[in-house]
Amino acid sequence: MKNKSLLALLLALTMSLNIVPVMSAQVKWSENKALTCLSPKMVELKSDMQKAWIDHTIWTRSYIVSALANLEDQKDVLNRLLRNQQDIGNIIKPYYGEAAGNKLAELLTEHIQIAGKLVASAQAGKQAEVTKLEADWHKNADNIAKFLSEANPNWPFKVMQDMLYTHLQLITEIVMDRIKGDWPGDIAATDKNELHMIHFADILTEGIVKQFPDKF
Figure 1 (tube, rainbow, N blue to C red):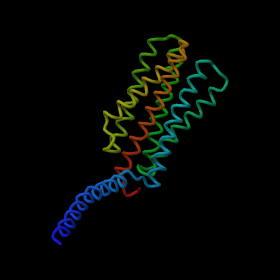
Figure 2: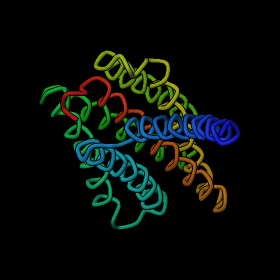
Figure 3: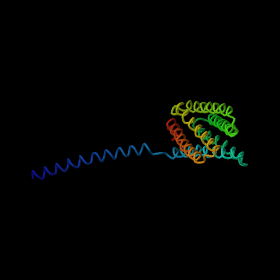
């Protein structure tokens, strides 16, 4: 009897030791799953934001190609690109209001207008104009970064500025590579720019979700 009782006690202890870690792991897994679970509204915002900034990269490059080659579609492509800036502004309106959305669209439209002038000046080899326009372009990026950082504490100015400056650098690479006929370089810069802007879109989405948790 003593041996049977001892054996039963040992089995009980062994089972308890094995079960606790398993239960602990299950709890941790459940907690992590809850933390990473996205609501339908989060998914919708993430999808809309990524699409808008992917469109930004696609239509920016399309305009660069059309403008440098003097294609007949460049005016239509430019109009589509300008519409994208309004699309981006519209995404933030449910959170920051009509005026703020229009302001962001206005700043982004200026970003595109300066880029258009830069493409023309670079193609013509007017370096003095290129230098001035690059300064204007970075000043506009600073204004966009300032606007965003003031709207949301989860979007620090330096982070926004760095993201936008990298975008400008990649666009510049695309323009210069196409002027030189460096097609592999152009393609590589385009791929980098797309991935970069998807990352930027995710930063913006995460910032909105953190600032307005009740809306998600």
